[in-house]
Picture 1: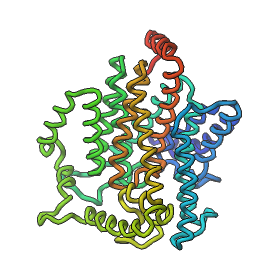
Picture 2 (picture 1 turned 120 degrees about the vertical axis):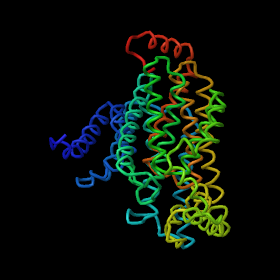
Picture 3 (picture 1 turned 60 degrees about the vertical axis):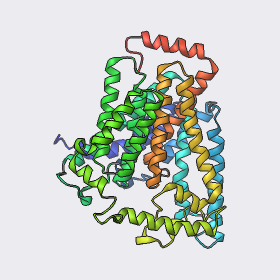
Picture 4 (picture 1 turned 30 degrees about the vertical axis):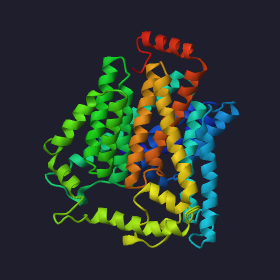
Length: 443
């Protein structure tokens, strides 16, 4: 706008974290969660905070303030197996780092100078976000507000991605033109986030009663899918297709016809650059292109590491410390990474988490009578399906930027499930009241 105000936005946002920390500790932790939501995926904005004292830790500090503020006020989380599984998994991961130390694969995880300990610390912020959300989201109004804030946050991410993508010419695909996006880790990671939430709001929109809200919801889905398309991530393309198939089976069978038509005509429908990107998986002589071959080489090497310690693995966070194909620090498949670093035990924990996430979404979708909760359940189920598929193509699980908002949705869904289980009649009455209010419902 040429006003110069934009220069001060990071400082204002940074100061806002400290204000909301005091607000959360002072008895309003829900407001702290609301403030946190837009910043969870927006890593490039948070990076500006590094210029200020404790700027790299203000998000963590606010999450802890929300938890402490909630516990002081006597708030409790709803019943869910996810809390116990996450706690056991977190403890096992710390023990796993010591196993890596004993095997000579990593330093002792004691200080912030130890890269494996930093990896664990950053990862554990994800279940803390889930725990904080489950504590402070207690009623329908809060659930509605969290979903609304998530939609607004997604819109800003879409805007940033599309502005960046549309500033380039895409008459043909060029790897050098791909942007890291507002998540700050690369186009593939951004694509995984976008695919998850395109499917979340597609499922959520199925149950919106008000036409304006339904149209806004589907407009957000269309914008997000377009942003995903221009990330040129083949893994996220597949995640979208599988999730749409799941939506068709669970709710709208007509989508199976649309999906079938698309699979036969996609080369005519999508931009030329997207077609080129998809076909790059193999070269003209039938060999895998460089990035695909790189993955195969990594997985082959990872197999031998897994076989060297199949039960407990080589130690959480240890793979990045070894020497691998093209000096890469990741297996480019989260399931392979979990198996290599934490063994069969870690893989079982990971599968239990995914199963519980899917189960929560499906049960809420099927059991709830309130359209808001049914939409939340179906949207969550589809987002987790997308997440599960995307993680076959890289680690999309341990990044707060990709998974933070998803775990906010899971925490919200645990509360919605409790409300549905405790008093379905009251939930129905509340839903009816909100439906009749002129501006009272996010529908």
